[in-house]
Length: 498
Image (cartoon, rainbow, N blue to C red; front, side, top):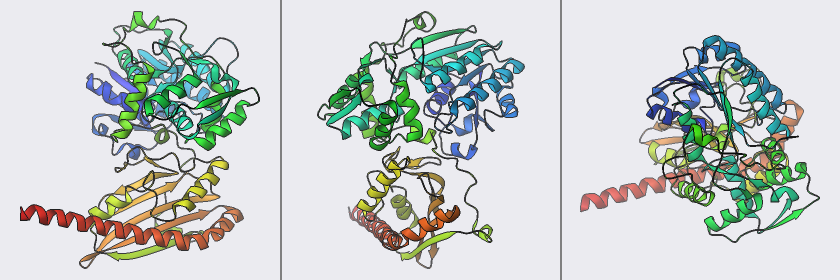
């Protein structure tokens, strides 16, 4: 049992590691810029939460205070174009804070890489390890390849490429080797690192039993998913930049993340040795091979049991200030599309319908228009509509819904989504409902704060479409909620009759 500090607790791996550390009996403290984003996670009341940024010395010092083990699970490549400078700054701050606080062990998750010249992304990850290692605190660097699990960026990239393209033009380095690791095995090694009896200063590779080419990864996915194996054409003319644009267009991965990820695929990323077995023995039953990791990921998706998602962990734009309350709009330009309807549906039915928006359900209005807008957003370097949802029916604060992010929700009265699409301004979609006599008033608002003249022109260009799309959405959502309420009453009457 140790006092453990975790960075990246709202991320893909950190969000899964924290409950494992709690199960082991550790006392856990996490750092996040937005504590409210942890409101709905099941372990929120069992951890200490510090608000702040890892680049802030004061926040890092507070996180390190009394910590024995420090997990460094963050990177900045989707947050800023100059992510290497940001990562360097964060590593320097942590190394200094950990030394001053007397942290016993730092555990850093890096990436498998060859010797020699590396991509911008991989070289930054390696440099973070070197900065941490230059301090007096022992650093255990675990170097992993592609992490395969439901909701991981690597899995989603493989999945969408194989699902969409029966014939896939790809760069020649699609024949490079990579050694994937199941997310459960990655978490196993991380959790065991908190249990080590003595501090360790070493750099160790972790990975599955076998290495594959990137082409094999996609073909094996197709077999696991029961679809036709894609035919992959390795072409010498596809540069990393062009390949990244292709990944951005076809998969949910945004351009800001696709460019550094694709750049890393130019290298063989395989384990050089298995010295990790001397420090941490393999899990009971052995490591999970890649085909089995795919099966487990697909099972999680089918059963709607995805714990964390890369998309939730990677906001593609700074959320900035939250939506101001209405009285504060005075003196600034804001555009609104407001729709209201009285409905016989209750709050439970209304919230059930609006909390299932997006993903496979869509938006209850002109699906072809939404798809076209999603493609245009992808072409502009945005996230588009195919990020989908982590869960088909349930939402939590911070969850991703296509190009939206859940900014506020209260099952008794409202849901607000903040746009992460490429627009010249800031946009929200808000749904509220309140009792009015024996019925409920459903209220729907599209809210837009324009930036410069471009923002104003953008809004006015879409006004004719808003009249169709948003009125249809309000009408269809209330109709769906009323149908759900009627079905529930029918079932209740039938049960009472029996």
